[in-house]
Length: 347
Image (cartoon, rainbow, N blue to C red; front, side, top):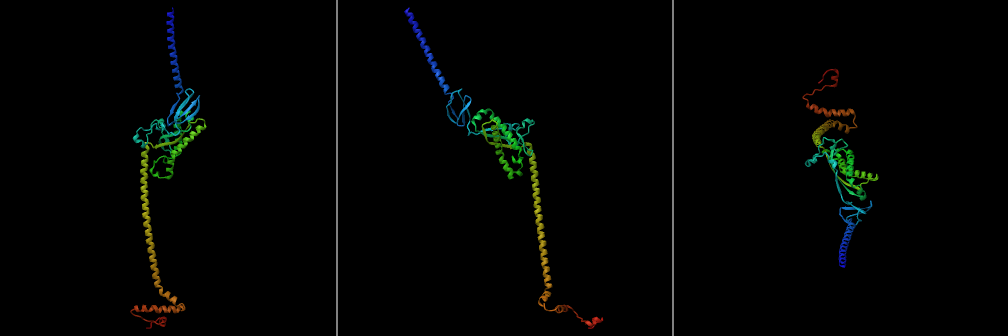
């Protein structure tokens, strides 16, 4: 009887040790699980990210790159978002709808699709021209809390804001203020300055719309830094612009030829006028010289004998002139004044 009791005691002791070991193992396992749970939110934040720690639904803190210590879930939840210094690119996909997939001819414009809903990439300019836009924007996170709340809506909202702003900006400009469509207008200073301001104006318009969303209580927590645009005209418009350019160049050549002919004619007319004036001046000087010579004696007589009477001057002039005249005559016949008065002749 005592031997049976001893065996039962040994069996109970073996089972007790087994149970004790099992409980000890369970304790170690529970401790390991507890330690794993406690350190489950300890992580490394990458250099281009920042961590937003949410505790019971409230943002507790925002931490930059480095080792993050946070309470385990569900006490605290950690969300990684882009760092504030990181530039995030976003291509505006709606502008690509209906565009050509032929990358080799992207600079030659795009075809207009037969389905109007696929032509969303085409915009109307202020002078009723049509252009196609390719756009890629770059933004940064400036409000981590707002960005985390609106994370799923940020990219679609930014695309809509860029499209709406582009419609307003493009509609307020003519074609030459967006791209160089007419080479003859490429050198205009005002149009070139407006082309340079196009991207800056679009960035400002998008940020202004973001500010209004913030005022309305729906912030996205981002700011746009740059928008890259590649405007182009539809393929069919190239032939029209080429025709206009050819006509413009031809008219420019005709105008230049007319200007040249005008200058040649004006120079010839001026030369003829100068020759006529020179000849008239020379003829006038010659006539004045001849008249001066012809009247020199009379002028000299009048200036030298101012005290002589008119009769004496005429007599002196007669004697000065009659001598040379008589020398030229072959025969001289004298007639007295009395005989001439009586109607006769007296030698």
